[in-house]
Length: 219
Image (tube, rainbow, N blue to C red; front, side, top):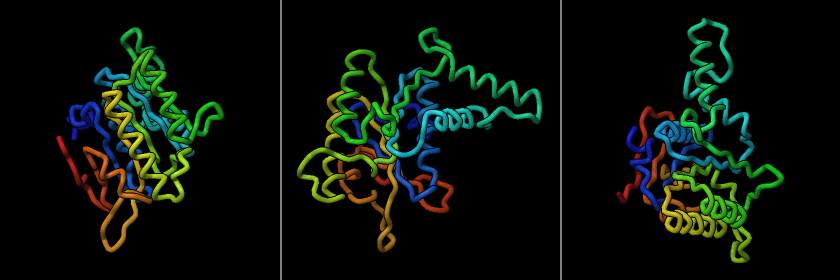
């Protein structure tokens, strides 16, 4: 798992899926992967297509780094750990002493929930100061402008294909988080299996389990 979290398991040009049931720990695992990759001095993007904002993401990163999302009052040692983690987030990576993480919030008025708008923004960034790994949370909320998307299933098929193509063209790992649906004890990515079919790596967090299930790994 540590190898995966430092992107040695997230191959360049590969679409990877982290999936779980509602409140199943998907975002927590993705933030853990994000922090581990950033600590390994990789430039990271975390894009969310839900109601998670930058402040909430910062608190989740803090909790991952030091165990606290707010400055504790229990002891000076814990306060020092929190202050050190906060400084790591706030410091500029250009001077080698901070985490290089950028946040994309689709709910922001200047951003976009549709895959075409997000990818146009991403391609522009990659031409200037490229990311080395991209995380996209809440895949089931991403939409497309494509007129062929006449259903939720068709919409997710198109979105998955475009994200997979972007990973290959940009030669970076794109890690997508999505909820699952369970039918007859068989789980699949919400609305469509297209994500799993396109992905090179599929990790599922089984409900009420203490392990991760690697459902697919091409590498």
